[in-house]
Image (cartoon, rainbow, N blue to C red; front, side, top):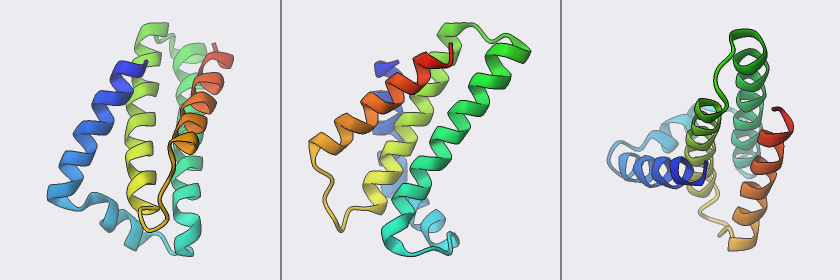
Length: 110
């Protein structure tokens, strides 16, 4: 799960540098700037829950595919969060906490 997370975050940040995806999404969200990163994190967590509930229980996605999808979603989400809150620098402890939280949430669904 960490390899897809790292790769998707690197790829997302390179694509975002060229096409400004985070700025487009950030301009479409009509909430205060300080809450945009938290909103993005909540959307990522909700999408992981939905994939976990429907993908594993209803459809029957294998655990390996589920973990890869969660890693990709978490990598993209962390990339967006870091760009949205770049005015307020995220320290490494916050990122480690978010990764740990995603790790705990992902494996409690299985």
